[in-house]
Length: 554
Image (cartoon, rainbow, N blue to C red):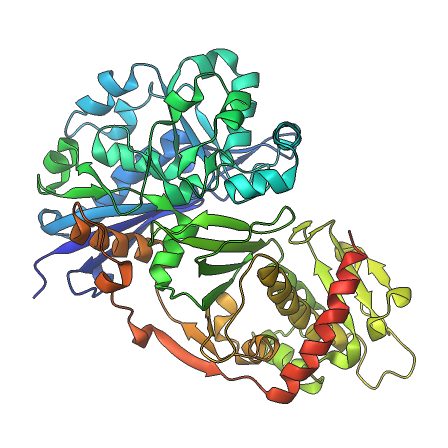
């Protein structure tokens, strides 16, 4: 019987989740719990956990909502008779890039003096100088992206220093906007936290550090040296280095849990809080990636993760973050805005079914068309894409010929014959093209940032909604030329947080290699496809044409 438990939390855009493992890494689903912000905290009037500004660019979340959700989550666990007293360590994952602004005096007057059995939302109602936290969906800071890149000498210089060129959603650019548009509020701020270090601070009852990995998504940290960059801090805001506090490795014990949680919920006095990290870094921890492995999440957005020793930051695409499981290592991340919703749009045009068999019909169409699609290439961007940077639109190239390009608006796109005498039924080329194109793009752009899958030992781990579609995964396997494994796990970010709680607890004051402590459970992995050599050869030739056609879209 388990005697020690480790709690992982995930404070994401739309909800906060909890997952529990024991000392043997066994997941206890009876204590998994979620609070959905829109449904259970309706008084904040969020949609998808956020508020959208009238300018169409500004997107924020109510900071107090996250505070209230934490109490509600623990109340749910309490009703399930969860043994809080047996929790040895707790850690967490926070949506990346979001920022919280603590009012001057909050640490001494509120945070370190939390009153047991008084709701956190009541105690923190006057704690923030900015009431609505900018989050990762915000794109209102273009002027600050341009200013920082100009100040430092261009996007390549910024990428070399911080791991990424300047992005509107990154925290440094968001703070620059706050410091200029809300001057008094900024001056009245004593600490700026990321969502991860904010939630960690509440559990700790004191300000928690920002970890190296989540700090990599700010455009403020030298991701190789793990230090703040004075030239950027000087532009972003006055006295910023003191407002940000220290940086920390992700395995560090931040301290013991606040007495509020001991008295209110029954945590043990000796329960430790491990420094929190971001959701993407925690997903890497949850997947237990080895160097050489590549993980791809096929969801609303498609995201590639990989761990690296020698990063290659790009001024055009992707991100290099510090690795939360290895203080000396790095992780690559490439994100595509157009994922499942775009695939579903093409599915509904050509394979829509009234009996919930749409994907079955989609797969039949895939199997009816040949690998390489007879050189028909398509780029399908239902939303403006960030990898590469291309405005929304559907762009088709029969015969991979730039002179035969056909553009259409996604909302007014209708099936039509694409070339005379095509033996394939009208529009069916799109079904294969939307899959092949995305996977060729992922391969191209991952190689651009130094991610190369070993043909002999490498494998791709797939999660997300499309991870159960064998026909789609076969194309992924054929494009990369390696086996594909589907992983059936609960939320990888919260599981990664629970694993990191266990890892940090075992490390204590001395770091131990992550995979020496956390044993990768191979039962989570299932080999679903192996590459077809002939198809892989076809894609190896076609991918060169894809590269050239992509350049015509910029």
